[in-house]
Amino acid sequence: MSDPTTPAPLPVRVVALGGGHGLSASLSALRHVVADLTAVVTVADNGGSSGRLRREFGVLPPGDLRQALAALCGDDDWGRTWADVLQHRFASAGEMDQHAVGNLLIVTLWELLGDHVDGLDWVGRLLGAQGRVLPMAVTPMDITAQVRGIDAEHPDALTTVRGQVEVASTSGQVVSVALDPQEPPACPQALAAIADADWVVLGPGSWFTSVIPHLLVPGLREALVTSSARKVVTLNLEPQAGETDGFSPDTHLEVLLEHAPELKLDVVLADAGAVADVEHLRATAASFGADLVVADVAADDGSPRHDPGKLANAYASLMRDA
Image (cartoon, rainbow, N blue to C red; front, side, top):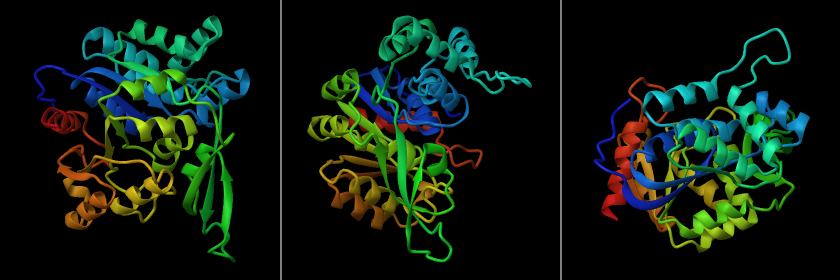
């Protein structure tokens, strides 16, 4: 991983929205760049350890929240050790197989404290996390999608697919997504963080199941629309199988804004190697009121993941020069 070159944290308040590995990359970058960082995390996972705990205890799925906390751990022995502990999964022939330690720790504190946000804050203090992690909403929910191409006899017909795992792995083309319940209450602390933010970062990540869901929570969408913060969309390095097959960078922007047409963007950040037609993307970004910034932010190993060090340098340049 490349090392960020920012000499000291910038005195700005940043809120990063997303989930999974994409949000982890942003947080790993931003904790080197800014003094005040809050992650607002998608909470609709229904698979794996998170799905099992959600079904058994009726809590929010903790997995994406755990990943965000791990990304905010420091680079010293304490931080790296606790990050490894959070991410450790048991391997057994019994019921504990593939449960993540961090998921169990988070759910334990939720049970003891009776509050999702208080529990996450306690985990953050234990880890020495360099930022705060909040759920986008405090009610368990499911993602549903309208998907084209599942029915071979009627390729243009739309089929409703339910569940984050099912949507992310569909064999068809996702057209739009919604939440069930349709209007979950936003986390009040997330709304307050957005209201106070200088910058808001959306993406990278699974577009329909990690990024766009934030725009489907009415209170969160209104907070993003009315916030005076500058808004950055960080584009993915390539389409994601199932969710965004065949999507160009332009298409990612277009479907994002279809779910929140009133949202004003300020910056679109794209990797230099992921854009075939820079001028076309620049024009698309401009049509949404945003400047296009093209930078080298991809990992050097050829994987479709962002390098947190390079991403830190790109964010630092944006926020320092604004």
